[in-house]
Image (cartoon, rainbow over all chains, first blue to last red; front, side, top):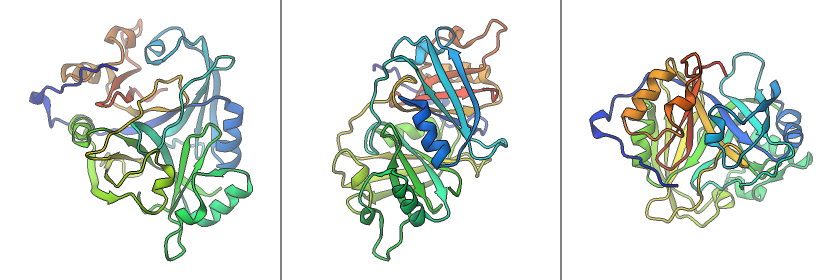
Length: 167
Length: 151
């Protein structure tokens, strides 16, 4: 992609108004399968589930291919005004392309959830058939502690769980 | 499952200083962590495509919203990066969106500062003249959305 990304140095350092991350957008192959994971296993709540026309407005400009419709599901922890939400989309009947990336590849590789007990969550996820991104001992330190694990969602997108100590 | 929320969103970039020119200097996020780390041990090799010796990790946050997730930005200095950012209809995490008080004014401001918009301003402007959301490219071509907080 050829980008003309040259900030006029005259404008550097004038930060805009403080803001908030409102949502994170994920495209998936099969939304029902993804809901089994994000809603069924991770316990997120569905705030909205709708079909949308994607042929007008700005969307065609941020799509790789022409798409007629999308199904969009908004997910959050709790029904309140919890930000950011996950905006999950699929294009039923269309062939999706693209592959999820690893942490050292350009782009957005993953999101992380803070949980109270990473180690017991790992066992729980494994028992539910969720695939860990590496062997359990790879995520365990010399003290036997697990501060973070990575799993694959149904599309192979990496999802991290951390104990809230950063990283 | 017992989760308290999303702690961070992670993305990898080619040149961290260039990315800071956008996320810190233009969007006004604060750097709360900046470190070069060893990436040869622990779980990281399992979630890397290639073998990487080190990474530079920067955590960014809006100071007014400490409960909002951090952006975790990483780069591998002196190593070749691969991968490319995706569009909204491709499998994976395509973008994140920031709610801002005045999308229309920000769109003009960013365009003036040389930030590439994903489409011309008229595409993002409704028949009522309002801008409910627009997209720009960050220095690595990663899509970044700005919304008025309604969608």
